[in-house]
Image 1 (cartoon, rainbow, N blue to C red):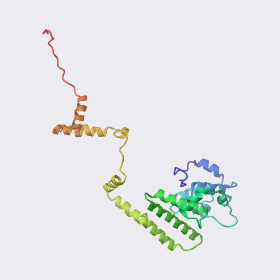
Image 2 (cartoon, rainbow, N blue to C red):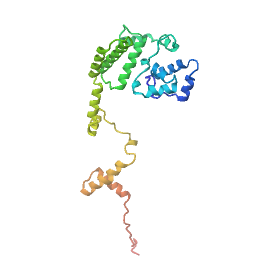
Image 3 (cartoon, rainbow, N blue to C red):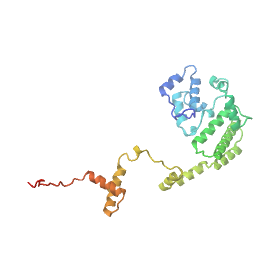
Image 4 (cartoon, one colour):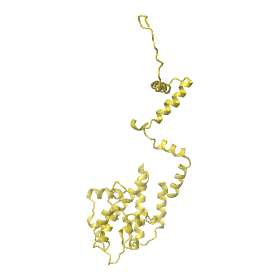
Length: 275
């Protein structure tokens, strides 16, 4: 599963065999760096302990971070690496050197997120967070956009505090308040879902009021003819029996006429009177 917003599909459109060829064999030179590069492209995290427990085997590592609940929702920005001198990743060390915003892009990001205290990776984290929120929940007003921006800010603050082993109690409380203001706290979502699913009619009413279904294309209106069948042979026939003259009764008469056989009128006498 691919979570990178740069791709239009949730699927990582490279087959497993080609991916394995790209990464190479386990003991080959640059194996780890290539694996990390693929994870970054997929926006999947590199978790050192999980990598070690999988025997540093890509085929065993990727199913764990993709399916286990404790890794759900984690991105490459949530990666955890060993910081000793033995492990040095050229790819990671060169990320900041290789990636930079244009002057116009940086200006737009500074207007959106602020100028002071942010580095390139902070802007990337904020943008990634913001787009994750607006893609996960309906954002149909400027107020919701502001709330999602503030939530992204708070997530960055919490991330930095945790990296410095500092308490995040106050920030977590603020984050919970922001989620509550946005009406997207888990308890609020659960309550809303249960209310909507209490009856089928409630769900239909919601769709009709908020997202009405448009009229289908002519070619898809009555593909199997069941609508016409009901209108002609049930409603039309009923109208005819009750003496109601309307379009349905006329449809019934027209359809019956197609299968009606008139009794032939044999005139045995010729025009001159002879037989």
